[in-house]
Each structure stands twice: as C-alpha cells, then as structure tokens.
Amino acid sequence: MKYKWTFLLVTLFTHQLLFAQKITTINYSVIDKKALLLPDSLTKNTSDIAKYILANFKTNNEKVRAVFIWIATNIAYDVENMFAINFYEKREDKISKPLINRKGICENYATLFYDICLKSGIKSFVIEGYTKQNGIADYIPHAWCAAFIDSTWYMFDPTWGAGYINSNKFYRKINNDYFKVNPSTLIKSHMPFDFLWQFLYYSITNQEFYEGKTQPNKSKVYFNFPDSISIYEKQSHIEQLIGAARRIESNGVKNSLIFDRLQHIKYEIENERQTQTYGSYNSAIADYNEGINDLNDFIQYRNRQFNPLKSDPEIQGMIDTAQYKITRSKEKVSKIKNPDVNLARMMTQLLRTIEDAMDQVSTQQNWLKEYFSKGKMGRRSMFYKVTWFGIPIN
Image (cartoon, rainbow, N blue to C red):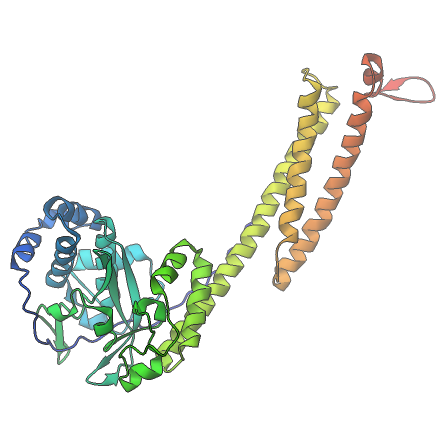
C-alpha cells in the first residue's frame, strides 16, 4: 500500500511596483534592440527564448541584459491578480502563465528570469522576501533574482524594472536601477526572508533593515555566503528547508510576512518528513513483497523436486535472495523514526509478518543445508514423507 501526505498551502505573494526612478547612464541600446527582435514564434517556452539568446549574445553580461529587457518589455504587471497566488504553485506554471498571457506578478517575473538565465548558462536564484518603499517596510511579499556574472553575484528585479503602478493601472517604463545591482545597494530596499540570499559577508538583521542600518558592520560575525551557497546546492531539499528555517528565525521574525513564510517552511519540512517516512515504509513493503515472491518461487521449485535441474549454488541463491530482501525490509522499518499513530500501527503489523516470513526462510535454509549434505539417494529421499505403512507420500 502507498500513502501520500499532502498539504495545500495558499498565500498572497505579490508586490506593487515603485514609481520609476532615475535611469542609469549605461547604454544598453544595441543589446536591447537585438533582444527585442526575438521572433514571437520563439516565445512560447523558455527553451526557445534561451536558444535565441545563446545564438545572438556571447558574454554573460549580454545574455543577462537580453533576458531582463525582453521580460521587462513583454510582460505586463497583472494588477487584477496582484493579491492572489498559490505560494506553492508549480514552477512550470509560474513560467507558462506569463508567456501565454503576457502578464504576471513578481513571482512570475522572477521565475521566468531565473529559468531563461539557467537555460542560457547563467547561474541564478529566485529570492523571496519583502521590501521597503519611501522608508516604510511593505506589508506584502515580493520576489526578485540573483545571477552569477563574471565571478560576482548581482541582483535583478525584473518586476520593478518593468514599470510602475498608479491608480491601479500598470505603466510600462524600463527602470535600469533594478538591473545588475550590487547586493549592498539592493539591501536598502529588498530584504530576503533568508539572509543567505543577501549575498553579504556581514548580514543585515530584519530590525536593522527596518531602521535603515544597512551599511556593512564588520564588528559582526563574518558570514562566508559563497561557501554557504555551495553547501546549500549540495543539500537535499529537506536539508535546505531546515537550514532556511534556522536562518530566518535567527535573523528575527520582525513582521507577519516573515512569520508566515517561516510557518510555510515548517509545514513543508513536516510534509517532506512525512513523505520520506511513508516512502521508507512503502519501500520496506516493496522489499517484503519481493522477498515473499522469491520465497514462494523457491518453495514451488522444491515441490517440483528441483526440476528443471539447477546447480547447488543456483538453488542456494534462490533462498538467499529471498532472505536478503526480507531482512532488508525489516532494516528499513527499524530505521523509521517518530512515525504517526497510524504508521506506527502498520509498522507493528508489518514487523510481525516479517518475523513469520523469516521463520519460514530459516526453515527452508535448514532443510536445504541438510539436503546439500547428502548424496543423490539421500537427497531424493528428502522429497518424501514415509507413513508407518511404508508408503511414500510426496
């Protein structure tokens, strides 16, 4: 039997855009013009968009600019749905919706940017957190990105870079202040839930962010974020979640946004643990069933008086395989920690069944040991039981 543990978690995740700020003096016109020549027929999925970028731009600087400008120019902010999104929506859906509808909210902008970068050979992450506007911390979450360009991490906010909202209407206006930003600059307005994604050697606490104290403070404990990111990339999903929860709590749960995100992560950790626990149980069940099938195959072969003929090692291997799988099933069950009440009951029943099967395997092993110790006639005689009448019965 297979068991599935599922949480459906829905939350709000969006952000109202800032009014356009001053535009940087760097001239991206040549790259932008070429990027915006991307044929509409190639914009149905991120793979085709990335192929165009790879074919038309050489450096990562050019590629990341092409990704940013195409998204900021072609995706409009979805004002109508700015307050409603499934927090755990599948990544594929976050990407496909803006490509189909040509509009989205911050999570769509960020995930689209991340996916095209990744397929264009640029390491990138989606960052979730909250922001500050006009010196005031916002009350709704936001999503932006980081990308690794020429051995350096830079920040990108394609949502804020696409335009602004005024009177519940989206106005498209490219804002290069949110393209390729130094982390020490963006931290003034963008605060990740998990300080790992600040990309700073001296992390800023939530309290400091509220107070505007975002300058590097070298009296703090040095945080080697490149090494921490490297470790993060090698961890399992549940290890990543546990680490994130620990860092979020240690940085101060300053507002309801942080609290909400932390609770969702804890739910996801529990969900992951339950999934792993039931997965281990199901794996034990599978081993047990395979072992019983192998045991039955051996018994049926024995009942046929070992016909068709096999070598002694082959016969021994049949029962050994059954024993190995049943023993492995018991080991997997024994390693399951802190099961819920229902699973604990099922585990108890399975262990009893396994013990019965192991007794049967032991009986067959002992019989086979005696069988191998005899000569041809002695072996043949072991397939018969003799009644007191002297009549052999199979």
